[in-house]
Length: 289
Image (cartoon, rainbow, N blue to C red; front, side, top):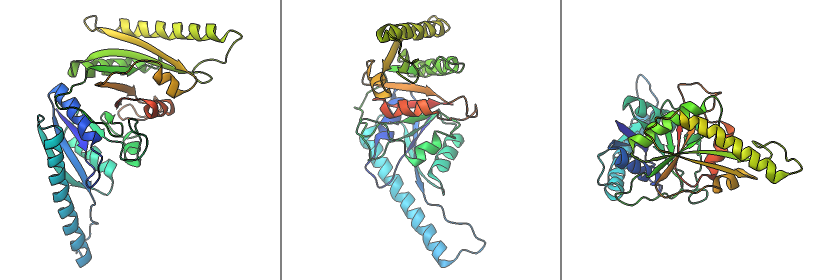
């Protein structure tokens, strides 16, 4: 299959291509590098200005392809890549159309050049993708750089413990097997939100809650194929940043998050808690429908 990577022509952000190369190298897939260029309006008889715009858009597309090919030669020369320019009035719609047409396994986007380095920034385009993509969306942290030959070493499932968590765990297990990486299940709790109000013995209450989460995880893990080894972790803190920082993360790791149950089952739909986890996760994130 193919991985579709968004390539922002004329900008310094190469994080999506680094992440797409990491996945492709681990799974043996190819990468289709897609640059979105402006699409001209459609009219029966194009005017002079419309013809000029069309020529400008085609030239921009040629330059975008050349820039993408050069970046691929530098970042992932060991991966089978193809660079294309697609005309569309919407970056998100153009990327989704390419992912569907290519029967892509996932769509990879970067975090741009703004925000904190090493953290994921959800742009207007990625936000649209996270609420409408029919294929998994992978988000690369700002400034992500992977070494040549690097592969994914562990895939962690963000486990909620609700009715849809089993499905997310199954998809995470499939991803970990496809890239030949370790599988881990992690649950995160935030005091005052996912944890019940403090009792007189706050430490005891937290220990009780942690034990409950571990028990829920254990029941879910029991349903995973017995031939698959699964690690488990629980992160609890006063806020999402502390909760995410309460467990270990390793280079070459990705976190998988499931869509909200409020969204359509066939498409990605990001819930509020998932959005907060994404902002504080120090590793790339894959959001699955």
